[in-house]
Length: 438
Image 1 (cartoon, one colour):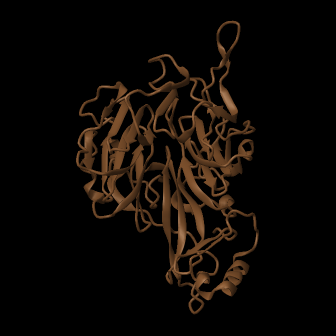
Image 2: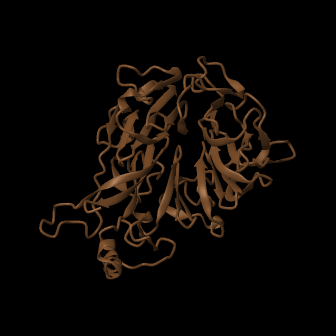
């Protein structure tokens, strides 16, 4: 449990005490005593945070020190000393961004996807990306086998597999015209002329949203062999004032400020939400969402979701394994968005889409998962594939000092999730301990 980084805020006292930006190594009891000296009421507000993981660990993507798979959520112990603000799950690797902009990576590293030269094929303990030590990373994305990140100055970075130009660099070629350097094992600047707000990574292509609301892309945006790769950013025409982007394997979503959702790319399962399965290289409106106020979007391998301001989820695209959450009697693909009625009463604030499963987060910190269940990727102890969203139990130990002194086995609080990240066969989440006194 995060015993060395704490963040407190009491609106009634107009006092903010932040310790997470400094590398203190005090044990939690000492910090609690110090806070209690400042104000007894503050000591009751301390909440610890942890990163948890579950699902396949074959490539070390869980970050738990082994390559075991986990059917239940477990703590990523190596990240306990740090204050993690966001996590990203890829197909075979993972990353975490701390409050101070430090980034950690773990999992599959055969193509340099962890941001350093691969000494081994996989790494199951998170390590700091040293090449980005002097910048403050604010957001990142993982594609098929490449990664993107953006810092607080709007500078974008790329690393990992680059055989399709997805890192923004044309591979060097030998005298026969064959590429002989494909991987970027150390993060380097990409799209240097753009001031970036958000990055998103597909199977073999990259997409960025700039601070002026434009969308740019490069790499191989279609299944390999369909078209020639693009090594320099090209602006996506037909989009203005974009607020958010989301990218699947070979399809793309863009939510504009006026609430219109646009989509382009591959569409073999209806993941564009256009009412058919015709692909399109140009953004077109997603159907069936008129009259709704969208606040977030997500794209999995071949499916898509949108979230409304009322906490309602709409899903479309590939339905196999129940990844859309329409129940066990409806695992068909949807060519237009449909409301996920099985989550209608849960007030969802985030949805994350993986390769063949999905995860939803409620406003009160509960996690629901659905879709393909092998490798424990649904996180509730059973390897059962289901289209029925089921709540995932967070069965990790409480933080030190949270047990009732009268009854050492009685917990005085519970874990609540604050963020989720769905990968190919695993999931990460950030959880926070909330005392019953708060």
